[in-house]
Amino acid sequence: MKRLIIIAAFLILTLTGCASEKSGASFQPSETKEIDNGLASSIEKTPKETNKSEEDIKNNISEVDSEIIEINEKVFLAQIDDIYYNYEDYKDKTIKLEGMYGVFYSWDGESSASVVYRNGPGCCGNDGWGGFLLNYDGEYPSENDWIEVIGKPELVANDEFMDLYLNVISIKVMEVRGAEFVSQ
Image 1: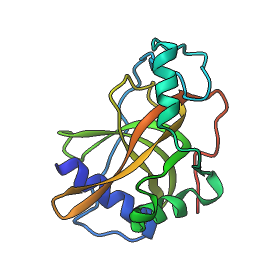
Image 2: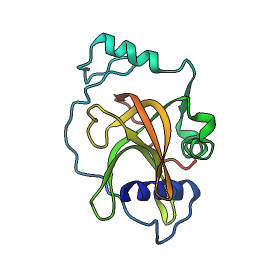
Image 3: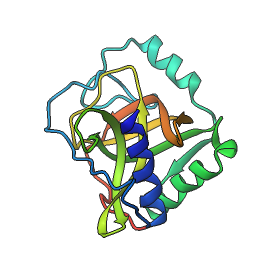
């Protein structure tokens, strides 16, 4: 519960550029560990080959809306902010974005969350981040892999905060990285 509160606070702070002592916990990426991601994209297979059958992949494709909202790096933070604040407009949409995969830990190290994110401006310079918490049943890629994620957004109540998740349909490890730092 604490991790979700802290993550939600960081997401809000990153997108608004403000901070307070109450929400100023620090997340640190974990050490890298190698994991086969065990997935193929719903669009194409990657060099890290899938262990899912072709039928499973076709079922994933049917879950994807014909209209995919693609979040690009020019408006990355603004688009995620819009999804958070105007959730009703996005709740049934399919979202596609690229970013770094990470596991963020709460300041006390007791909880963690898997995320797709990019670094951005924060309260004290370039110390913020924006992205989605990931809700996914499969195996995750390696820490700091550049990934493309397709999924559906979900706001989850967590005490006094709302956490923005992406219910993952597919994760694909990309060879070419985009901008790790975004300002909008």
